[in-house]
Image (cartoon, rainbow over the protein chains, first blue to last red):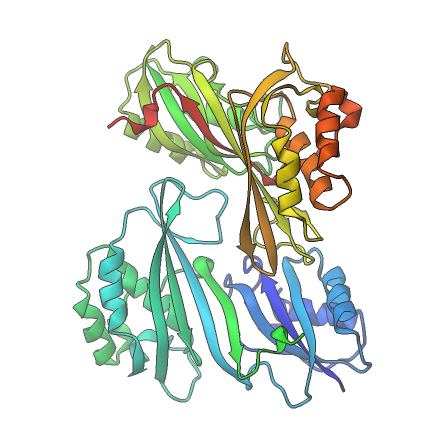
Length: 257
Length: 257
């Protein structure tokens, strides 16, 4: 069966995450229902990142196997037609080798987290950002973040539900940038790793928010990491500001001409 | 009665514009209902710009008269409390002289229009941008826009419903900037004038889109303007991408310490 890689954007609100669940709306289900309009009885699709309820996709990647050979541009258009009115779109579609795998071929995941600091509730970005009602100290958060980059046992920063065999991961990037935001400030976390533990990004951001608020000295992040104890983690932040921004592969199939 | 200036942000979707209308949800009604929770039988509020259905506010300005003297910070907080769950917030509140008027003291209005060019429907920005499914030529649009800046009879670019006495206005700025957008490009129109005619910005942007698409040569904008004929206008674009960004006064009351 010919295999196609799909680059997918979605609004996480209204979906119980990526993964198919009985009777609940999920991104995977919506995509599989759209595929079923094109060909019956197709295999399940696989994605690079199984995002949680409320988490957004900017550059999620999945693959699907079709019975007939599709022009990738037509397949993209047909899927977007049948995906309506779901807030899910296929941004790009390419035919790939049958042994290429959206999840297992991936060599890195890039997440973006948007945190808005202002007193008044957000209006246009409701559901799209996490909001702090108080200013946060970005430099203090950067000092805390520096302890987290590298190869560590991230037991403190993973959900007790996490099914990964090992808590040891390499965090390649945890950059914090500040941006103008109407009536306040936006803080963006750029987080990159080969792979992540369950709730790892939200655990890291929720902990660093405590540092930015002055409730934690930056060094307490290092102590929490060294404790290898979930109880040492700061509050896990909500999913609203979290975006799976990009998935990296040895060869970027979407950049092929 | 003490008078307060309010800087207001709102999401235009779900509101039939700014102005109060019987039984229809409008931004003015929602604000007046919130004020009525604080003090009964207050006078109507006045705003700098009467935005249409679906048009957004980033920096709309209104004023209200209260019976008792309020701490402006407490008034802002009380209004934001009672405005929930409407997607309207008061960003700033200042006491002003009783002869200061949100509309008549204003010396300029700045509008922003967001136009996204990409094939796939937008997900996160649905209702917040106008979308073109095709790329547009920003330089051609700039060439067309150049004919519109200055003092002109804008009869071509105003709604037949417009109640302004004169169609002659001075357009101070019509700048076009381009920005990265996920899987496409965003084109922003920055439009500034002392005041605008009804539907003027949407008439200008809808016409310039025709230039960007190559359907109109830039010079046709000059011809349309000179015709002083509504029938010479391009299509009026939808309200989704339009934001009242800022209102200018001789003295910026919101910058007072």
